[in-house]
Length: 306
Image 1 (cartoon, rainbow, N blue to C red):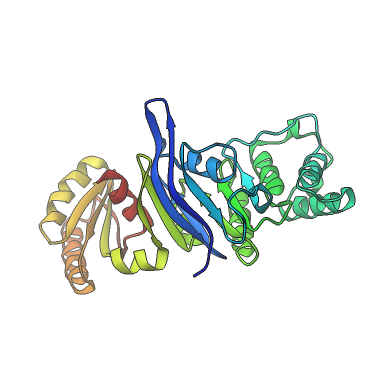
Image 2 (image 1 turned 90 degrees about the vertical axis):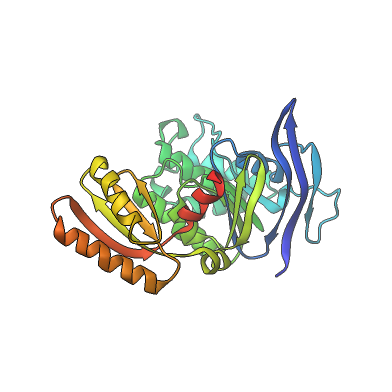
């Protein structure tokens, strides 16, 4: 699959602190790549370097069809984690200005701004001053400016931050539709969103890439069947952890939920039968028994905690 951009040996240091350490990866054309990692892992630093806002200490970034010395910023739409807006401007004025700064003519910038504000549910507020916008509205407005020039590469740092469930769903649906016209690289802490939207997964820990693969391959390689038992409280769950550990598989507790992973569906069925027998013998504390599979969140936690 053709790469839109290739990142080689990227490094960023601040004095004695290394924020990004010899990071290399490719961004595949026409796909959505998610960048995951704990706070302070280097995600925003990488995105800022790719967007041209930070100069790397070392490394190279090559865009397909673009000479190494050429400015890559016209190819990129960028939404930072903290959106800088002008409170005295209206939403329409702001997005139109962003369009003109990317090279659109005044009429084309206004038309594109109105289109995006409508798509993102801000058409009724387009003539209001941004200073009166809610946090979620400001996040949507930031996304409008990132999309204004129809960029080949869309870089989004926490794109659904501050949105309510309805707004989050609208943005996810929009990004899903954009995959046909833009390559997307985004970071998020909401792992179900990453699993729903992304084609490829990068996991970074302490400034270094520890996972780089397609979501489909990661699922095929790491997905495991599991039994999940939800208890009434953490003390009861601690007791159940010992019981489920005895039925095989790998048991772990997360709050009042005990999960047991298995290597095969057959082993999971045997484990589930044992869990149901335990629940029948002591029904009071058990709120739910669920059969399923591990998720991207499980892989993420193993990658960053190992």
